[in-house]
Length: 373
Image 1: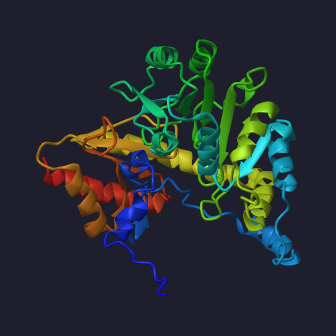
Image 2: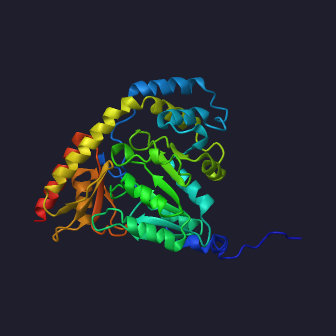
């Protein structure tokens, strides 16, 4: 008897019917690939981890068996975080970048009928992960100068009985930051979990770790991809009350962080004083970029506490797309087109590079904008 199964002609569509319709309606988080001479589009550090730190990492990696799984609990990494932050180890969760922690927090809190308040424009992963989990993303617009509307955030959280309020501070892609008093108000005047994504806080803005004590609804996320110069290795951590950490941990995959990243992150944390001059140099270059860009006619430059600058092309004779393309093709400088974000029409974002990279960007931008006058 012929038991060969006859597949329907629309086999692919038949398979995709099993994917949640709400997910199929979403666009994936993606980034177009370029090979520029100068890369200023992903908010990375322009400086690598110092060689002395790398040598110490390489020595340890060479002595570890690669055929064995990493420790089930990354105790060395967790202890290094605890030493650096003075937060108890049982309230620390480490992961494959802070993005994985965003995913884990929203996985354990969001379901159909659950709301998450998200000030926008901001990092698009918050909305994407909320909607993948079937929740409702409640957008609260930033003000015209890209600052946070604290009153509106509080109202939205109360009106929707939000499970989580996500606050990226300093905010990507705008660079705006919340004060201590504003964070306290949002926490104290709502009963939502407060997820503080502080990926850029080493460059400016209020460090919210001191607020965690006595606030079991608050979580702070950190990454090694920016100030710690480890974007290629993917590592991050969350600080929270131990009871809340234990719940978020349930959504974390086992062995989620490989021992290369675990080892490197622990070394970098314990040697962070050696990175401090590089962070200071990046912050100084950001300030220089902002000042020089503000002097170029036809641009609106927004204040930033991060390692990048948001700017709007306002000259009527040229579009932001033309600026982007001319920077890339004429000068070999890649910036980020953020014009599809809410409120950010005609906007681009540039991160601070080395002084030489920043000079190349500024010279190209001046030349482009001069032709638009």
